[in-house]
Length: 187
Image 1 (cartoon, rainbow, N blue to C red):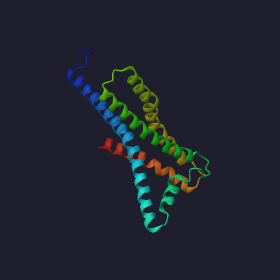
Image 2 (tube, helix red, strand yellow; image 1 turned 180 degrees about the vertical axis):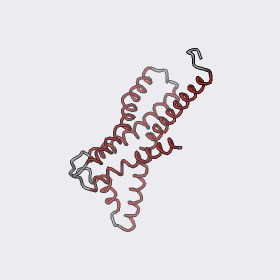
Image 3 (cartoon, rainbow, N blue to C red; image 1 turned 60 degrees about the horizontal axis):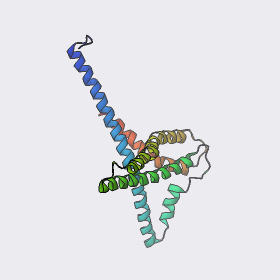
Image 4 (tube, rainbow, N blue to C red; image 1 turned 30 degrees about the vertical axis):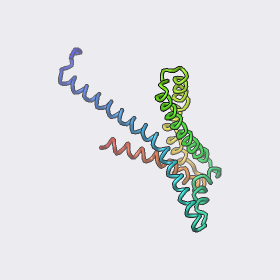
């Protein structure tokens, strides 16, 4: 109103700006929660599948565990004109690193609350290191890795289909995230 804009127009603009910020905040929360839940979910599903195939191997002896391990990890070193195998290997390494960092972060916070040392310099340094050297790079990884891997899978011409399937397998949670975000934005 002070800039010569009528009150009704000022309220409408403020409402739009607030709505956009709320949509952006919710979108960031969805991406953040997905980034925290996804590594735990992928690791849990992989461990459950390997456990179930081990149990099945004990009863029928058809060696299903080797088939699952071969499908997930066995084609990382296949020949390809794009480094898809390295990207798949990096996915699993970073996923296990994320699981460790979430465990370390939880342990750090629980010890700080038990001992009431959150204001301690040592505790602050550990939290600072976990945040800047683990959490921030892993968050950036969540943005860069899926796009890079997707482009490599689309551009790759001379790859084994098993290596491409392994790449699409680890890219599936990110594609689901894109689908969820599109549905949420269109809702």
